[in-house]
Structure formats: C-alpha cells, structure tokens
Length: 120
Image (tube, rainbow, N blue to C red):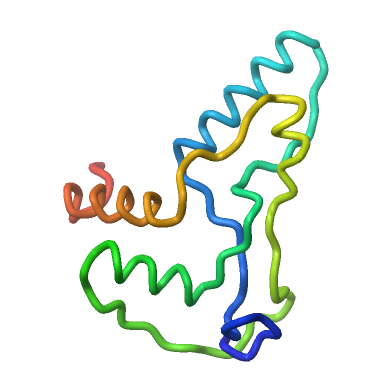
C-alpha cells in the first residue's frame, strides 16, 4: 500500500545483504561455540528503508524504470519495522557492511548472470 503513516506512504522495512546475514550467522555460531550458550540476536542494518526507496534505488543502480503498482495493505502488516542491532554489535562485534545501493547492485548482477534463476 501507499497509505501508511510513513514519509512516502509505503511500508518501511530493514533490508539486509545476504553476505552480511551470513557473516552474522558465523559470528553467532562463534559466540555459541565460545560460550556454550545459545542466544537470539537481530541481524539487519538497523535502519528502515521504505518500499518506495527500495524501488527508487533499484531503478537508479540499474538505470531502468521499475514498473510497480500499489495494492491494498495486507492484513497484519505494520507501517514500519526494522532491527535493533545493538546486541549484534555489542555481543558479537557484528554490523552490516553493505548499503541499500550495494544490495541492489549485487542482486541485479546475480540476476543478469543467472536469468533463469538457480540451476536445478
């Protein structure tokens, strides 16, 4: 939807690069091995990005117009949600390294190299 109480009316979420997520998992595993304790940690950039910002960034880094349309809100969705990464930073020494533009660039590069998606 585009009628949320956000700056541009679209939902706000925390997007994370898959490599940052993988590094976060490795940091959590190392912590568990060191302490012999499990834990729950939020991994993300710690910053909210609107759906419209995502579309605009993707268009900018690819040089292409991104066709999109707004549809009704889904039941249960919230206007804005992003990770509190304090524990990841303080306990694991981890933080996301890739910004939104880099995420879009890498996703576009992968898709260009794999137009049919994953091989079976």
